[in-house]
Image: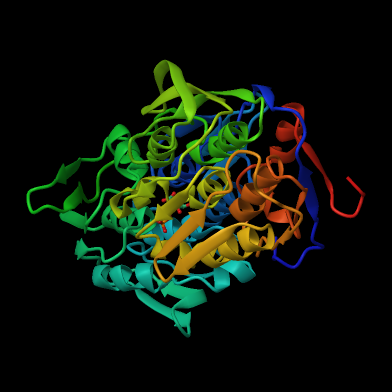
Amino acid sequence: MTGDETPIGLRARRTGGLRGTARVPGDKSVSHRALIIGSLAVGETVVTGLLESRDVLDTARAMRAFGAQVDRCADDTWRVHGVGVGGFAEPDDVIDFGNSGTGARLVIGAAATQPVTATYTGDRSLRARPMGRVIEPMTVFGARCIARSGGRLPLTMSGAESPVPADYRSPHASAQVKSAVLLAGLNAPGITRCSEAIATRDHTERMLADFGAEVGVDTDDGRRTVFVRGQPELRARPVNVPSDPSSAAFPVCAALIAEGSDVTVPGVSRNPTRDGLYRTLLEMGADITFSNGSVAGGEPVADVRARFGALQGVVVPPERAPSMIDEYPVLAAVAACAEGATVMHGIGELRVKESDRIDAVARGLEANGVRIEEEANSLVVHGCGAGGVPGGGLAESRLDHRIAMSFLCLGLAARNAVAVDDCTMIGTSFPGFVSLMRELGAEIAEAGTGA
Ligand code: S3P
């Protein structure tokens, strides 16, 4: 993917309710980490339920470029034969992460304390995103980086020959930055620490501990400080990837706003660092229930059932943002169908995602007759009530999978169809999204086919 492919425009329109069971693919964050941490382990890591999306396949390619053996097997498992901590070989070509900020930032972290030089790039969206936030901590370990202006990709990094551990206070509420620091710390002698003001997703900590690293958390000074002892021998472990709560959010939210819907999504991760959307929806009065709680891949999971009903606008507190950072676009679609205003504070990080998501959501909602108020770090959506969104407009997806899926969901509840100019990027995180939604009863057709 270069971001320059022929765009595929789609249009979603209101039909009857969505009904049935929606099996959503594996968690993207856990999938990236399974490949990266498996590549740093000794032995064979067997991964079941890996998300086979473009972002994750780009990370698999990157791990092969550093010398790990990564294979998809006939039984649908993925098998990773790692090179051990510190065992990366020098890639013989540029590493292209496509659309994936997570892949890029985590792999840059893993490579920063290994004596290899590599050049990293990505698609048009990724090349516009800030990498300074990982370059800076990597230089603390002793890595040397040369990037394009503004700390953008492409960049070349020479990993530290004699790495030193870092004690890093992250200025960003970013699991990618924290994970890059922890992965870099793996090959530095001694203890590496990364502190964050608000807990972000903790998959890296969980998985490193499961693979035998000494990992801990300290919350003494009001911040959350994660530490890892460097140079462990990571032992290969099986990873069973749970369903992605960020992907589950789309059929769940569509069911909440499309009249007559009743949809169940099985086996969704309920990791408390990822469940902010579900807490918010319950506060809005959503008819959501959880059942069959169990554990998959070290993560709590449950089946989520969502039914259409009346919703109320709420104020989403800023400290909740990291636990639902990818879900604000689809929350905005739900908010448009609620009574009253939904206020989202502390969401400035959305401006540096695959697109400027505050702007993309705001313009798309306005184009579909929904009143919004936008500030640098916040968005207010004035709901039109159930069935009240006028629709009939075009939303620009701006190379952003979640913007595309959010507006298709909105179209299923709006009075007139909602068109999305380009849906090609959906495959970066949720291959099969359109067919899954159609199986539930959604009417989604190519724009221009008169649907
Ligand atoms: C991710 C962290 C989040 C999230 C991204 C996945 C991860 O990014 O938006 O989709 O897997 O660590 P930030 O760390 O930049 O908030």
